[in-house]
Image (cartoon, rainbow, N blue to C red; front, side, top):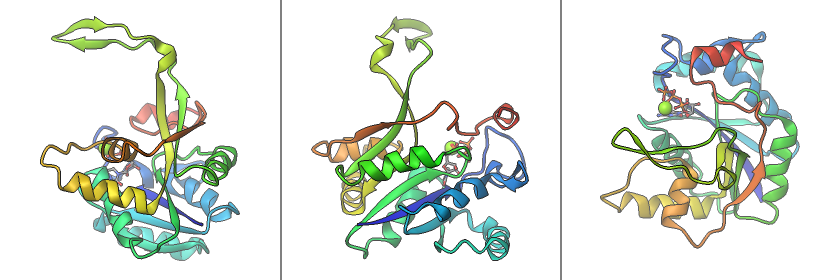
Length: 223
Ligand code: CTP
Ligand code: MG
């Protein structure tokens, strides 16, 4: 089964607040997006790589790709306004590839390690859907009307990271059902699969506290 890494990079970084989207900002001599592209391109368990972009950044990225010559980069796709629409662009692009796994990764997570990626691809040999997560470290409050409604047991909670990896046919089916549902609300891809194909078990592998998503400017100053 072919493993295709999808680097989701069509966001505008509104919380980060920079005119240049965070995935194109410099980090240790490379742009943020280059870190995960370099890892996917060099990892033996990854067969192909695609990037999903806002079309306004296509020229910028094509110039970068021309310089870097990633050998596995085979597609540059237009994303959508919401993250799930960017995933859907990849699902549709690969719809005709019968036997493949999509590994959907946030371009804004430059610190993905080879060992996490290996855990994901190893798990894909036995599971049809794989998520990366770490145990929650903060206590969680469920809040209603500005007050604590519940303090759930922390041990049951994990924080989601990426990549999230799925057999393409299952994810495509979940999105087909989601698009028929008038009450569909945007969520991550595990949320879409879990809601519309609850029969599919999503296996969890351990991530790392290093594999953070850059969301606010402070996240880029931490190492
Ligand atoms: N993403 C995407 N398409 C979108 C929105 C997000 O491909 N329409 C990507 C982002 O580029 C990022 C990843 O999904 O790599 C995680 O999203 P997030 O951290 O929310 O990034 P932004 O949406 O860019 O940031 P914000 O929500 O602050 O605007
Ligand atoms: Mg966002």
